[in-house]
Image (tube, rainbow, N blue to C red; front, side):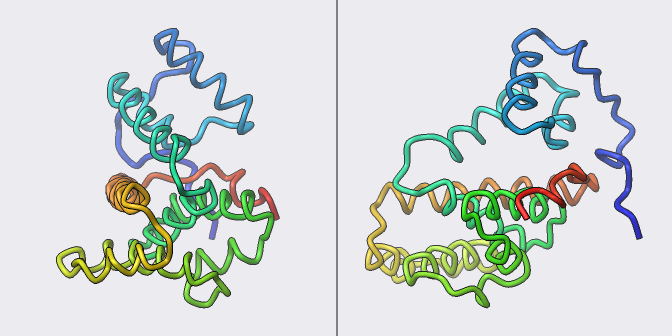
Length: 192
């Protein structure tokens, strides 16, 4: 079975890159230069300039902004949340990013399949258990969970960042699933 060819399964016209406002054309050019592609999530959001700008700003602030979390740790959170939500798009894209940042294709595959099967530092296990619990049983998060992160060296700001990254991917997973958003096929073969 092959992956479908559509970006999203909605009949929303997605503009050609040349039809986008100048700032978004420039942004897409930066993506193409850095990644070698325009992620389909950005193409999907391109039908609404303000949603694309807002989504991109928040994503960049969370994933590349100043934080006590490394890029790898942020991507690990994205994968664990996406695994719990069975989000094909995000598992494919962020599994690729885990492979890239870790320089370990096996870790990327383990994270996508079942992070509990991976040999992780206790700090990472605590962080990912928190993100998983926040995804599966949000109502059950309490001070014991936050203290567990503190006990593994996470600062208050780190806990905020973990919660925001997990929350962001819970949102994007639901949108991607609702509209059958498909990942760029290139992600499947990258960083292996």
